[in-house]
Image (cartoon, rainbow, N blue to C red; front, side):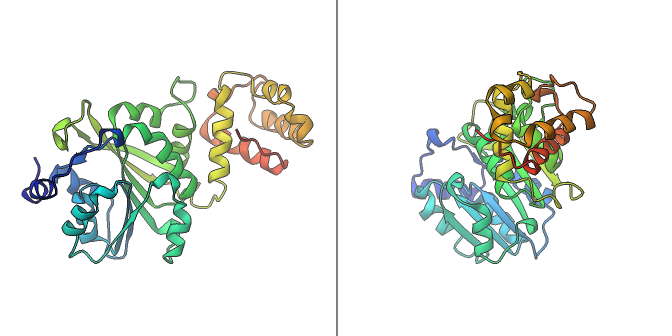
Length: 294
């Protein structure tokens, strides 16, 4: 149920949600508190919020953290947010499409290191994959991510090797760290009400792998997109057919070593490799001065 401040703001500014932007605003106070609790915020924390919306979550995060950097696409929300957050001096509103922002540069311009950041994101269904790939590319060492996604997206995010939905998104999620669903949200938690249920996902970074691995960035994301374009084809056969072994002279030997070290057959397919094997495959290609991307 929406709180009184929310209803007053919507009525005062006569705001009409844009369906094309997938705008379904979180109005559940319990969900807002659960998100803030799950982030385990301290007064020294900095939060990057993707999709400030009407500011219900933004305000709660700002009450707990040192700074909230909120990126919002829809500038029509500016009067509403400015009014609702007028007494919150720890909120920095960025009016932009998150997909067009270099998030690492944004943080560094404010004197912040990416590995100190926690992320809260309300992801519209049409952009869930793109925004998550963006987060993993720009901020692979973020401390924690809380993602609000529609129920249908969870399968793509948590898919296992060999399954139909296994792809770059599930690979990157697995490599990033531990993931769990900590709350399920019915349509009544939102305004306007969507047609399907949503889930709140908590992702906690695995410092043993990703925190020390600067290779998980834009180039690795590009590699995964390239590799999964023909997920069911024999990967080495594809490289040979595309002339990659002629283009990159060290690549064939690097791939042969990868096959031997991982006890694979030479006809292996990308869709069957574990996330850790895909990371190793990428590193072997880079070490062989071979850059595979779409």
